[in-house]
Image (cartoon, rainbow, N blue to C red; front, side, top):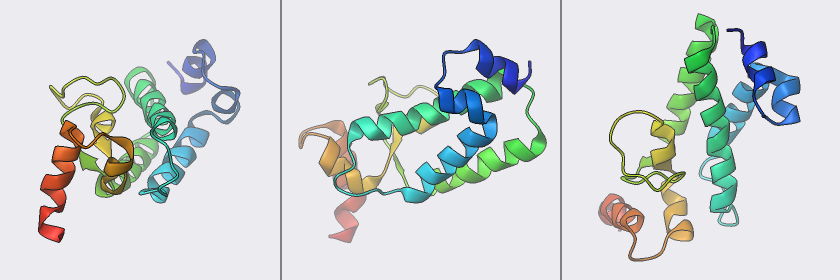
Length: 135
């Protein structure tokens, strides 16, 4: 299926419908480039950012993608991975990670964990473990 047809069939935003896959790639790049964000950046805003990657994932699974576009997604994903840390629980669904599916849902900027999660959470345990050598 073509990307255009797939997007047309879905209930995506007007921006996605108008800009298509190039819009999504550019948005994902901006999202990844801006990490770790500021203290004022809310978890809900981050969830919206993750939704962008979910749409890209749906397109990768369901559509014919050029090798250039696949390379670009991988390049941006690498930036995202370098600027985030893996958590045991999905920031999106709260599920425990079982495989590599939706890997981006299990990653957050390390710097934002104390702003977004309660002190006794598993996420904070991860934060303390990752930052103990930097104290």
